[in-house]
Image (cartoon, rainbow, N blue to C red):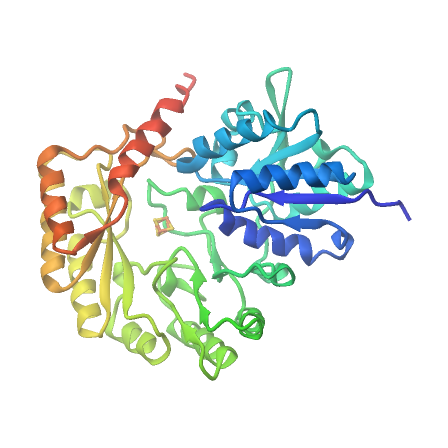
Length: 427
Ligand code: SF4
């Protein structure tokens, strides 16, 4: 047997990368060949630095990891620089992954990471740690990229995993989170990174597997269970249709696993429901099993033209109907909107604000986002979302009435940052 080097994996466990790390830590702790790898979850940069230094001084080979979306890339890059400047000569392998690293590998590597994971990270991280343990070259890992003489070298792409093959969280390290029941999305909304990162098809975790992890969660003393999916009511289907029998089988199994006093949250944070899936039958089914009093519904725009150009796959009336039905079905609809979508003219913006006001009158809360031109999406080269003064005034009024919430103002700034960092496309 090859003797193992002691390895410490230090994960920058901060929002929003911590969601990916809860899953990836599960992939590491469930691999018997990595049983000796020690995992650390520092929640701020000072603790991260102290942990990295302490493990390096103890003689471990240290891997420090970051995961981020495009909106948090700048903050992660800045943290990396801050950490590197304080290592005082210690050798630490600094790695990154996630959707931004996958879409913008050169930009991410130029920020100073030693190597990055491209695509889904479960297999790549396992292989990389096994290599580090054996003293082999981590850059030979499948699915990673690095810089050689300033040029990108990429060794394949991390393949799409079968969700049942991996735990949804890291139970042994007591790091729990929402259970990912579906990865990838068949809808191709042009502003969204999900189909780019995880392919335009659904991969579902099986009912038996979800129930197994729900029991683990309950055994740990937790009462609440939540789910990650691109579209909650698409569970068990391969296309746009709903499979309510599959959703019911899932909710029944989870309710039993969490019994007697568990609380099941479905169709709400951190996931949402597409508006055309809000039907009386779907609502009645949810009412039988879930504890949430609200549903998060994707509305996105009040302009038919913009809904079409973004390929949302539904119209305005469907959003209004979903709101009405949700209220009648006993849920508070929280409807998502994106402000400043590409191609919007004044009349489109007016239509969106008018729809927000109309839904608020029907009993909805509206959730405002600013459009971000995300790398990897068809809209990556579009201008960042802007919100004009008149629209701001109307939105502030809705917010003062408690009908609007969200970080759209901060996102306007983040969107400008994303646009300012992108390179012009060749050709
Ligand atoms: S916005 Fe939602 S429905 Fe559209 S592609 Fe993204 S995850 Fe799928």
